Length: 159
Image (cartoon, rainbow, N blue to C red; front, side, top):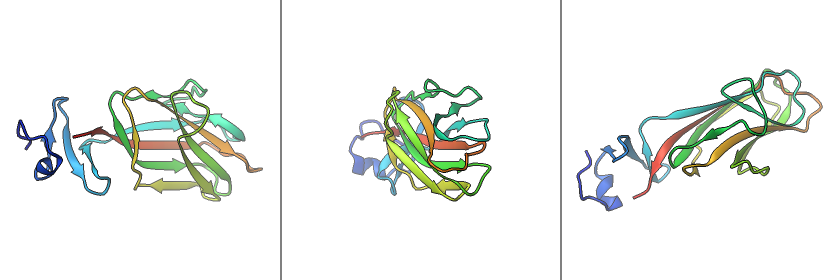
């Protein structure tokens, strides 16, 4: 357990868990090299449509999709996993993560003739107050059908 007054990273590493002033439990993730919350959160994005072509923003937790649909982060966080699922298997498209309503992407995942993909080794940091959005960009003749993307993230602390 965390002891008051211990602030050095090497000293903190000897403790498997500690509870910070925000009330959350954290552990040092050796693979990612940072303190991450024990609990994980998810963001869900989807489009309830069967023929998506071109660039399209996705809905956050619902059917309303536009360039204003997204999620604001309440703490510094780290994306740890992303799951992508569509109804068709033969399509080439990109999933783009956008930050703070900017049109350019900060992270892109390419899918080439697969209907699903799981990435579980992601180590991508975001900051408190960032507004996260997703878009899909399809350059294929075939349209994407009923895509759903889950982004798993946890809270991050710096010491």
